[in-house]
Length: 105
Image (cartoon, rainbow, N blue to C red; front, side, top):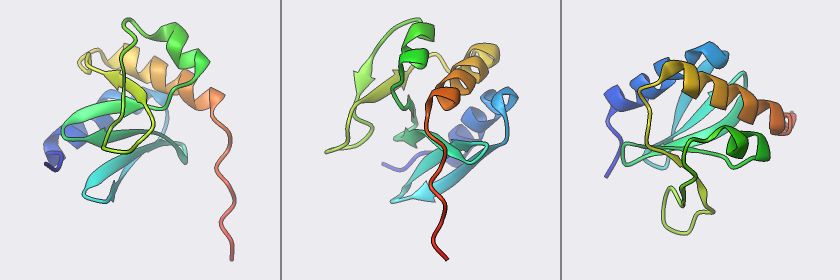
């Protein structure tokens, strides 16, 4: 089941204080980026964040799940209504993630 575009936009809006948020449709679902770094996925109207120690320290509840069959576990974020919390989580997660690789020309 594909994610609803309204839900995808809601998640992007909720994370917007962390930086420039962009979503890209991938394989029928969505990847979500902050300032050029992919930090999460939106699959089946559920929000997942890449696991980092910085993110783990901020989580209210740690719930690891694969966003789709065969995927590695990500942090499943059930509480998507607290904008300040999500923006802070995204910001700290992105600080801990490596810079995106340069694209080949």
